[in-house]
Length: 230
Length: 230
Image 1 (cartoon, rainbow over the protein chains, first blue to last red):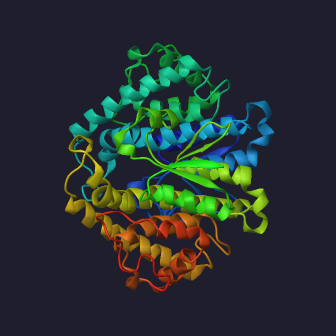
Image 2 (cartoon, rainbow over the protein chains, first blue to last red):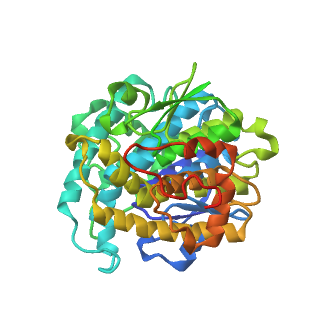
């Protein structure tokens, strides 16, 4: 049994929920508002960020990148052909390249600022940085979503899944970030059919269902968020 | 034989040079000015960032995080007791946590902005973002160096090396970032004796020598940069 300190709209936490779901591992969720900088949470992760995975008898595992390497090392082999970080060196390089692409670059340029401006700021005190959203930040992030969507579409037209023939952590990461933005209606699906078709496949997986049931008081989900034929 | 696309003052590239040095692997260096966004370089790494490691018959390996996992997987076992990502799960979590701490957080808050403002901008055209350094950015980064140095000092007082009993990739990463800043004279060593003593140990390793011989025309190194008893 694992415990995940997460926020329902933290894209990196969503990625780890999808990964644990695909591994078939049981999970207890604890919502963490990282901007409150709780002392007990900082003891789990001095960087103060979500997600953090906790398992009995192990040190806390902070950050999506560290968690995913842990999951592969401890639970990867038992996945057999469905291993989410495939065995060959070339495939591992490509999956990790895309994990960094989505969890670092896409997060920094798009999903991170959108969540901060449009969701987290509603819950932050003024002292923590709360207040009205910065429209220029949102506009820049939305422009970045478009070029990232085009890149996802290009990958999806070139390959069966984003990193190659089979579904990997790279697909889960990309879909996790997009799902958080999609809740807000900020993904211009109409611009890329291949990206949309790929996302529909990932979205229909059972591991995705818990994400689709996350609703935020005061911020209604976009019309198509839950719809599998969006 | 490996080829590394790097910049002599890119802290992440410096980390990979130290890692390859500790592994005893031969290396050919190609200087890349990532801000020029060369088409051939973008083909190696669509993210357009250094470092990128290239080996015959393998796909290019972009980014310090992906490279270090590759090095451990392909060359880790032959290191025996000197393996830089130790074998136990708990140690691997701690080394990876600190890798992310230095390569993501420290880079974003301190070494990245300092290199951009104080070094890269000298070589950038106006169109690429060149020009005089932004003093407010430098001041904020220097303040961050101080709290990071205190954290390194705390780790060094608690343990033999930053992640535990033995030297790991975490020590190399931390030292790589500090070395780039130290060239500029921006590390207040006087504030933390334990951090300084730990850095002196890493700095005296043979793998470090190539970094200490990097000199930049027009930007003299700080008085203590090369000195092993700084």
